[in-house]
Length: 222
Image (cartoon, rainbow, N blue to C red):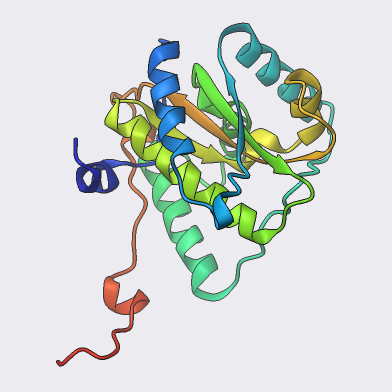
């Protein structure tokens, strides 16, 4: 699979087969992430790769805290969207729920869907991404580039992924269970596993605005 094929084919996968991804394949995927460019080659990203009992314990702890009514306290705050940015989110959210057969008025179904996000959509593997708290916004940009590498490499190997802020709503859980120092900021979780393409949640593709709405050209003859 070439890089353009991977870019065009990749999607956020939200339904996975139970089969774990092998350690060798995961190493190849993470190695691709580590090849990302960064400011002054600072390489700010750090990854905790989860599988087996570690994945199960992480999910169980998160679910217990949610059921106990613990409020989210992310190290990186939720974005506040408005205008066209919010419209895009709502448009895709409505379309996703339609394809999944979830009615907006079905509050229990909506709650269960949101809970599944914190469970990494029950993926057999996951990645928790973090950076040192001494680093600033440029390092977050660099880490985002590395995550794109990771997700494209996963797709190349037939592995699906989905970036999930909901998986790190209790960053102290990640620090405690994964021996991550208090000096680190937990950025995001990534669900990783083989897509279960029999389910609509693994087939859904987010929309994209056309190029003319996003790009201006300068110095080109019409």
